[in-house]
Amino acid sequence: MDKERVKKLVRELIIEIGEDPTREGLKDTPERIANMYEEIFDGYESDSELSVQFSEDSDVVVARNIQFYSMCEHHMLPFFGKIHIAYSPNGRVFGISKLVRLVEKYSKRLQIQERLTKNIADELFAQGVKGVVVLADAEHFCMKMRGVRNDATLTSSAYRGIYENKEEKESIMAMIRRRTPETSL
Image (spheres, rainbow, N blue to C red):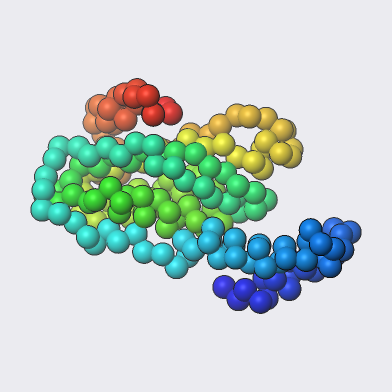
């Protein structure tokens, strides 16, 4: 990302909406926004590090409540929530931090929730696991702040491998949805 260009564009935007970019509260805003964009859009440059695996096996591994923040590609407003990942290993498991990095890799981009869910499932499944389920629950500021101005949330899911089978899907969904104090589903 060219931070100097972003700063220039933000300054121009401030002018276009009718503000004075030299007034005290706004004079450092282009710099702050350029720094923020570098941070919140670093998913284009990041690596999920899924190649780091451990020689263990388990029937199912479930990671619940992975927090994420993303930016809607339609309105460039935030959406955020929790992602739940379940996978059936094939002799090797991933560290929990790798699943968090995988979520960050795709959430820190201009995105829609449905694609975010699919991207995570596809990359994890490509690592050779037997099956993957990804569930995402999110609130969208593009819906809260404008348009219909509603607090509805969106849930999206992706199923790969053995979890595409109806019986396996029902079994893994019951495990993911098992309520714990921190589980949002």
